[in-house]
Image 1 (cartoon, one colour):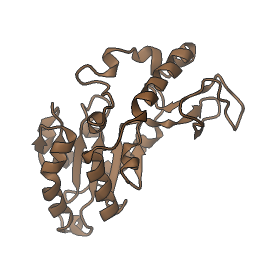
Image 2 (spheres, rainbow, N blue to C red; image 1 turned 120 degrees about the vertical axis):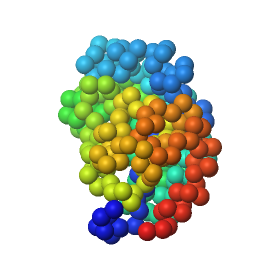
Image 3 (cartoon, helix red, strand yellow; image 1 turned 90 degrees about the horizontal axis):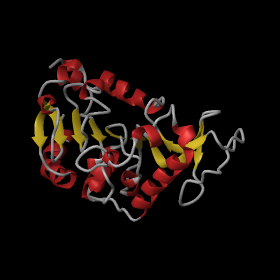
Image 4 (cartoon, rainbow, N blue to C red; image 1 turned 45 degrees about the vertical axis):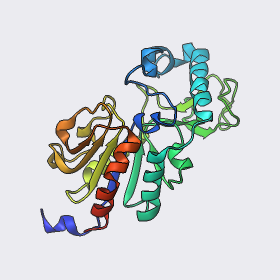
Length: 248
């Protein structure tokens, strides 16, 4: 390994998917009897068609809000949040595909939400994002910047919609060295692929690539695979990850 790659303490990059929050009672989207087996992506999550299905869109995302209302962070959220508090936001970077706020509720200081969140609204007329005022999404909410109503949607990134936070995946790919750790939790890699995040030299069973998922996919990329749910897998790997993070 080039000496230059040892100039910084190891960083921990974590990509989480729906499997991270499944044990908190939040439905997955793609695995098992996930949400997309029961709902139409084209009707409720397609940027090119959502305005003609506006009532269905708001109804669908209010169902997601109701589902999350009583959800609490599970042990996996708590472990990740504790790591970020211990080693700081520069060394522990939490990037999630989830639209819930359970990592934040567990105490994580900074979380990148690739696909938006359930706590904001977005005006597609002027591209202004603003906090949702209330316990559910109101379809009559007006954009505080331009006054539009019909152009306002839930602050979740739809299919075929630009996703600005994806720049963090490119940054990860550029910055990551062989000394860093990469942990993927509860994702099927159908939306975000390992190749979009990992440097070329880390795309084949790298010993510091860790995968946690009860039905693991893309295992050829990972040197360590835990075919477990998020809480069990993180518990099993906690000592090893802590050791690597505290040893330069």
